[in-house]
Amino acid sequence: MASVDELQKKIKELEAKLAAVEAKGGPMRQKIEVMSSEVVDSNPYSRLMALKRMGIVNNYEQIREKTVAVVGVGGVGSVTAEMLTRCGIGKLILFDYDKVELANMNRLFFQPHQAGLSKVDAAAATLQNINPDVTIDAYNYNITTVDNFQKFCDTISKGSLTGGPIDLVLSCVDNFEARMAINTACNELDQKWFESGVSENAVSGHIQFISPGESACFACAPPLVVATKVDERTLKREGVCAASLPTTMGIVAGFLVQNTLKYLLEFGNVTHYLGYSALTDFFPTMSLKPNPTCDDASCRARQEQRRLQPRVELAAEVTEDCGPVHQDNDWGISVLEENSPADEDCPGLKLVDGVQVAYSIPVDSSTPESSTGGAVAASELSLEDLMQQMKTM
Amino acid sequence: MVDEGTKRTLSSIPLLQTKAGPRDKELWVNRLKEEYQALIKYVQNNKSADNDWFRLESDKTGTRWFGKCWFVHNLLKYEFDLEFDIPITYPKTAPEIALPGLDGKTAKMYRGGKICLTDHFKPLWARNVPRFGIAHAMALGLGPWLAVEIPEMIEKGVVTYKEKTEEAK
Picture 1 (cartoon, one colour):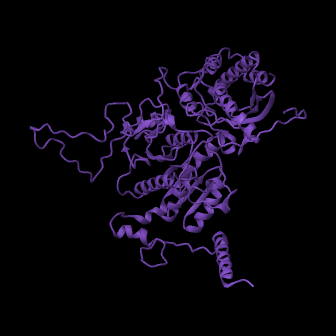
Picture 2 (picture 1 turned 90 degrees about the vertical axis):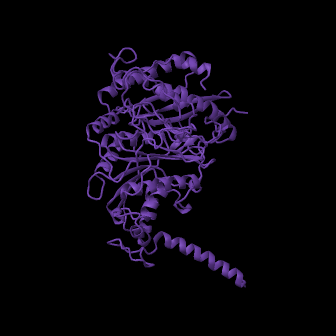
Picture 3 (picture 1 turned 135 degrees about the vertical axis):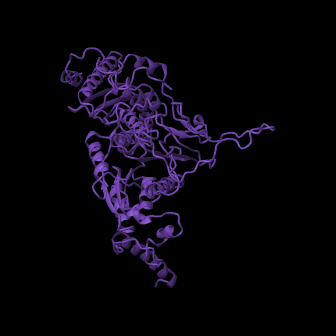
C-alpha cells in the first residue's frame, strides 16, 4: 500500500503533467475587440491602458495598428516577441530558420518539449496562446539567400495590417551576414529598424536605431563593440564558439522593446545607440551620423534624399540659451564633456567612450562599385568553360 | 594571426576585382569568372605542392556551392562534404562554409554545420573586400579550421576513418 505522502507526491506529478498538456492545447482566452482601460481582473490590457491615465503614453491603443517584424527568434528575439505580444502589438512577423534545441534552454521563452520544432512555429503557438489578439505570421527561411531575400523585402514592404510597409524591423539575429542582409533591405526600402546584439562572450550587448539616411547604417562603420574590460588575449575560445546568458539577452531584449514602444507610440526619447557592459554595469549611449562614403549605395542615396528634404523641426523641444551666464571665469572652472556628440562637420565616426569598432578597415582609394570588369586575367573564357575546367580537375 | 605558410599560399591566389553580389546580374557573372579563375589557380597550386585538399563546384547561378574536402591524419585520408550559399551581401560578407556531416560533432560550429572561424578571419576579410573570394575563404577559413578541429575529433572518436582497409593501429 502506498503511503499518503507517496500518493500526494503522485498527485503533484500528475497535476504538473496536466498543466503541461493544457498549456499545449488548453482553452484560450477569447479575442478582445477593443482595448479597455477598465481595471478588472479579467482585462489583460488594464495595466497597459493605465499608462494613459498616468500621462506616460497618450495613445496606447494605437499599438494595435502597428506591425513589427522580429528577425531571429533566439535568445533576444523570442523574448522581444513575447514582450510585444503581451503589450498587445497589432501584428508580429517572425523570421528564423533554426530549430529549438535543448542547448537553447539556458535562455528564456522556449521549453524542453518544443525541442525539434522550428523556432518560428513554436514561438507563434506560444505567443498566440498568450494573446490571441495579435496577428502572427511566421516565416521559416534564411533571409540571406537570393530568393528568400526578395520574399523578405516583399514582406517588409507589404506586410502591415493594411497591406503597406510595416512599422519597424527588429534585428535579433546572431551573425554579421544576416545583419548586413537586413541593413541592405532596410536601406533599399527606406525602412526604419533596430539592430540588437549580445557579444559572443555573453557579457556585453547593444541596441542601435537605424533610420536610413538619418543615422549611421550597419554598413557605415565596422561593427561596434562595447568594451567589456575582458582582455581579448586572455579570452579562451578553445572548443567553443559562443557563450550566452539569459540575463544579458533579457536585458538587451528589454532595451529593444522599450525603445520600440517609445518609437511606435511616440513617447520619451528613442535612443540611437545604447550599449551594455555587464561586468561594469556601464551603459554608453550616443547618436551616430551616417558615413557619406558608406559602402552601401542605398545608404548614400538615402542620405542624399534626407539632405534635400526640409529639416523637420521638433516641437516641444525648447533649447536653452547656450551662451555662458557669466562671461568671466576667475576660477578656471570647466566642464569635461562626458558624451562627445557627433560632430557636425566631421565625417569621421565619433564614438562615445566605452564603444569601439571591432576592427579597422583601410580607406580604399577606389570608389565603391567602380571597380568592375578586368577579371583576374582573361575574361574571354566563358563561365561555362571555367565551370567545366574546375569540374574536370 | 596568419602564419608564413598561409601567407605564401595566399599570395599565390589571384586577387579578385569585381565588387558584385548575386543580385548584380552581369557584374555577378564577371565576379563568378574571377572566382572560378582564382579557385582553378589555387587547386593547381595545391596539386603542384602535393597538397590537393578540396574540390568545389557551383550551380548555374553561382549562388549554391558544393564539393568535398580531404584531410590527411596519420596517413589516413578523411573526406567531408562541404557546401555553402552565397548570401546577397557577398562579397561584403564572407561565405559561410559548412560541413553538414560534422554538425553536432564539435562545438566549433554553428547550426547546419557552418564552421566557426577565428576572430581574425572576418576582420581580415572585411579589410580585403572585394579582393578576397571563395578561394581565399577556403585557404584562410576552412583550411586552418580542418587542421585544428579534425585531429581533435578523430582523437575523441567522433570522426572515424571510413574505408574497407581498416589499417589503423
